[in-house]
Image 1: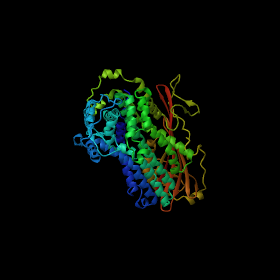
Image 2: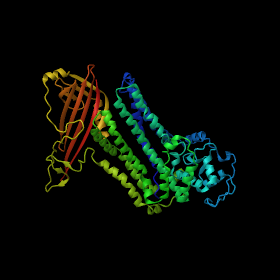
Image 3: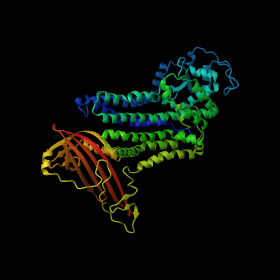
Image 4: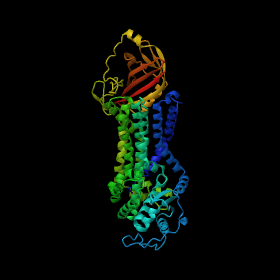
Length: 627
């Protein structure tokens, strides 16, 4: 009990769940960047689009690694053949005879006091595996000096362990340490890690090569942009920040899952051979492995640091270590939201050219929306976490293990309630946070029409239902804080500035949520994408989607400034929508519309003679190309 759930398998399931939407997104991006979508072929030949395409290719690389990992899981025999061919792995019968291992010293007799005598070391390894996991097969490499022992799948329910020359040397010189290393690999086998990790795993390859992505590919679009001197530098900086954010988010969850399964395999080795033997094995393995490449020194993300492994080895089986091991991966999932929120501050600043304070406000709103949107993932995390003590004894049998699980009664009696209840606090807290409104905690205490706080209450007599007062104007970046009366422009100036015309939305250039969730913003974005706009001779702007009317309040250097407000009242609700817009008409019958839109809804209901008041606000900024 206390071993972590197979988080990397859940990671894979989440990727599969989102795969159709991701493929559709990449398809639309490919169309846009090749001139077959929102942009025409002349536009995509500009220097800025060259850099943008380079950054999109880089952004796709982690996604392609994950896609390769999914293929590797679905076709284990293909991965087995590729691994054994590329690593030149041999069946033990094909290995040339090696000098027999010397008799074990009294300081290191091995668990059985050296029962193998002068037997060949490969045969000794086979006998050790057959004693602990007879379903696992051994394969041998006689050339590579940068690996010791690695697990990989032989099929859906078969596992193979590849051993390399440094491991054979360790086996002959430090037998108990080598046996603990094999027990570590058997721990991977029991958890089913051979399908998602081990040698030939794209997930491990992504973690191993991350430094190259950041050092070379992450900076390439920015360097290319400055080389051509494009005027869209601020926008390209925002795109590079997006690439770094995607790389960080893509790495954080698989790396945390890889570290968890490595530490769980150490935990199995410690439980089988003892903590002292595991600590000795970690030191011996670290000394034996030859690190030849600079990236292996600078970026060993596919394995946790030795110091962290020592910490967990010393405390293996204790409450603190087990709790940390259970929460390592869920904390990384929450960390991706934190990374996206932090990186959104400079991204919004450069992309929308808004002050840093407004960028922070928008980024926090995006973070709150992301927590709400990720509720299905957190429900899956919570369910797997609470059920895992009952499923853990059955899990190894999926991978061919012959260990009989205990009876259901014994499992229920030994359920570690304190440990898993403590671990469940994190996903429960995130789920509760996702239920809070995103603009403000208005569902808890909301100012009513008379300025007092309104909450569910029981009155002596049943109150009559009535429509609530219109909501107050929210604090939204780019929108006045108070509803000051719109100035009336001079008719002569209006006639000089405005030419009555009709537009349609060509493309939604950008959409930035300011309050609320991305899903709410996308609902409005979908309507605006098909809108037809009419600019009247008096400067009013209306659309077929119900946006507006917006009224002309002035102009600045040929840019029309517009604003509007509309309230819709029903028996139980009042919804007010505010608009602030800038319209830049051009001589070629095109225009660009920058529209800031906020909508607040106040609801007042009477249910079973109880009054309930709530409010919610959604706001977003859209940039539209009109023609």
